[in-house]
Length: 405
Image (cartoon, rainbow, N blue to C red; front, side):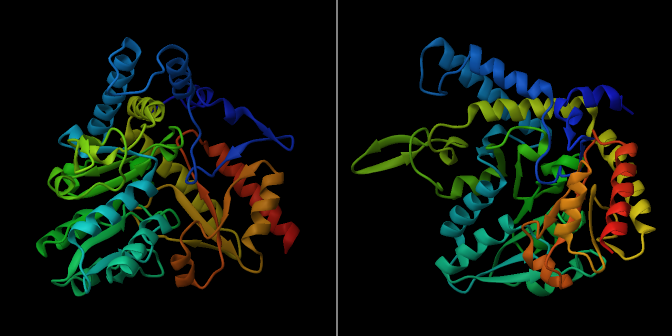
């Protein structure tokens, strides 16, 4: 499908050695590594073009503004939005969810309303809604998942009523890898007149996403998980909602006219982009999108699924290892525990062997509570990982188990 050796050369950090061992980086769900093209594009911009966007009449400002808005168009095409007016740059997915929670909540929530979230959500798609509850007197209702990892979508109609204002759900669980049937969730919600926000942080990385085809009302993701820089993210919102929602923050660039008597807002999407935007981050994100686009999201998904299957097969033969989330479709995330061994101990010893995984609650404590565990080990796979690296990971884990048992 693609040349893995050539791809790995695009990511210099993958050639690192950790404690004298070749790095096996399996913490991509937390943050992905950046290709040289992203690093060089941002470097080049800062050396040759850097100037604040919008409002400036000099050449560098105009060029910087053009690059920023071209980056917005790149994002629009990537997720299939109808217009760049529906693409808001944020500091990340967390900021994007908070923007919707605050602005949508201010406009549409009253005391006694309710919000539906799934039990497998990342804290970033739960805590902002809890803040709304405290401010507006709103109730959160939870759509549960089963022990095998599938989201119990059939229970959604029983949670939605005439006071439900929004449904918030992940495209792919950052712990289980589960990819719920979003089309079904969105269709059920829309039949009841309820909009849907989708957390796309993991989903957008591991496969093709088309927000028009999904028909979601809001969609959020972060750049740093998509091989781009930190500090940049995207909020997609249907124009009809964004036009009705008040701004989340006030300041420069999001205004039309300002006086002591009152202020009017700039047109979309600038209404939600207060202050100096991360225009360098937007450029880096656009370059990352071009990079994965050249590889092909379908090819990436197929290859990563092969690696995931290989990892599940290897770990599935190890006595005492429990893998969480076994339903398909599933993105390239493998969370597990080992009977009698704390996940932190496993992660620390693997690190000494050059293998980087993540341990802990993965910002999903309600999910941990479902299984009655304090934390899990998580190996999250990217397209630059190899079958040999999966074998190194599995062999190293077996050594850890032999040492700690």
